Image (cartoon, rainbow, N blue to C red; front, side, top):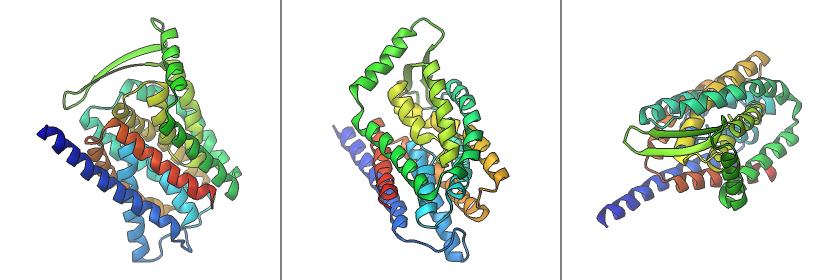
Length: 312
């Protein structure tokens, strides 16, 4: 009983810390700026602090933080859509790399699934970077906001039919080459056993790569819910594996955006420095949060950002 009370208090403290970080990030959306680049020491510190918060929250929920960076660059700093996408993806790449290091130490990355799905994202990551410029300002807002809203609703609703559909796909592939059974034991000795449909995961990853690069979100906001609800991954494994996939996908997308001149160097470097430290904090916090709490934190953040973009 005493242990349960202590665990509840610990979860409460971590939830409060996460809420403070989320509140600080969302508060920025209501304070417009006149420039897309830091011109003062205060502005530079702002980018560093924002990067720290994004790194912590994005890594904690396994989404990379791009879903926070893109709206901030659009709404607060008035960057063009392709600049917001390219700059965000560069920061997401650093965030994912830092977060992956922590999750690798925890032993929660499914490297087999991660490498397979990452390879599937690469063609779309290149194509998406070229097409980012074609999305107009308001059109970009609507597409981005609608995507976040749909993902958030799916996370909250968790339809039974979706779960049954995933189970059906795995059962159909039972004994075949598409069914993959995995058992991972993390650094603490906690065992995770699950089975997923390789073909479905590969197909989903192709689309994730495109959206990741075109919108600058890194793909985590789509990959994490898909890994959990469509492929049956435990939330902690899905979060860690998503970060690993992001490293590869975002690196390819960032390289393409750089070649196209879509990356704002100043904000990217400053936010990148912040997310490296924040990612370590987020990965540590994630170890102490339950699966359902991780999913709720992600869904709440998505709803808030989607509403701000759609009502802009």
